[in-house]
Length: 426
Image 1 (cartoon, helix red, strand yellow):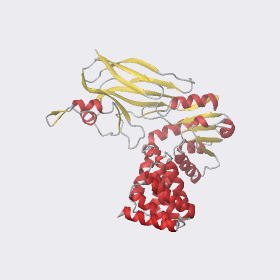
Image 2 (cartoon, helix red, strand yellow):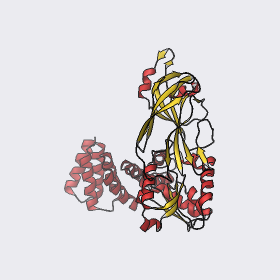
Image 3 (cartoon, one colour):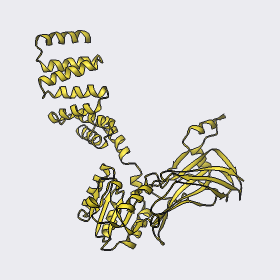
Image 4 (tube, one colour):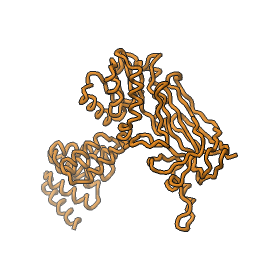
């Protein structure tokens, strides 16, 4: 039937080739027949005759999208919505195309508009959720609600901010820490945020809280901020909260190195002033059930442990977690004293303080704000909300350890990622 219809349309066009809608309909037949090159040719022929034929713009965008030509598809969809801005499917398709191109902001806008136009069109909602999860990781909200973290930052800011202070923050997030500095009376506060969607939200939050004249939000990475265009004068207080659960993986060290080289006064106060990566051997029956597998229903499943990630974040604070050794400061970084850091590796001798089945090394972070204010997400302290879960570096299988044994732990970092592994047991 499709082939007969195609022949009929082609016959009609041989007699009257100037019928744009017939070219468009023929393109749809080709598309149904999966002859996509012919389909795009027909849609383009229709638009050459009538550039305002909205349906042909939409259909061309769809044909191009199926072929993976996402950039060209967005151009066709944008032309379509300039004629028909209320068609939800076009906005959804724009979201899909922009997401495929890695352009998250217009993808969010497309999905959001599609869902506004048709709230029962759940593919748009799912696309929006998927894209926002990439842009705004879920740890943002619990991080902002971490009262102990917030209190530590506020206490540190209160101890150094004066009416003459010029504050620079790396990683604006919601703008919370910048607003703390502004409320404490800093003369100038500048904060930068690499993710445009988050930067836009921070700008709105700052304005709605009455600090638009006091706080400047810059939608850039800190390494792109300049004195000439952004800060005007070197900052004398640096606030940064781009720590990950392993402390390093958000490029905190290279960001501080760059800021100290270009953007700060020689005696700039750093908040926090220093930070450490803390470790201990760990075990616990409930932890083991969630991290490793052995015998299940009479079957040996141990080989599965070889393919699960050896580094895991521990999201649940309700699990029984036994610290089997003394707590060790594996690495410490003094942000005020030092201006650069190099990769390190070392062997740490850790003494067992509690016998048990050792699952590996548990790691958390400790932040030194000043002599009086220290924060850490200690694994034994339960908190209602935190953006920093502890990290587990797993053995392939549990290792039995006894009281007072000495365990050698290999510890390394490359400035962006630490790693810990058991080397030998005495």
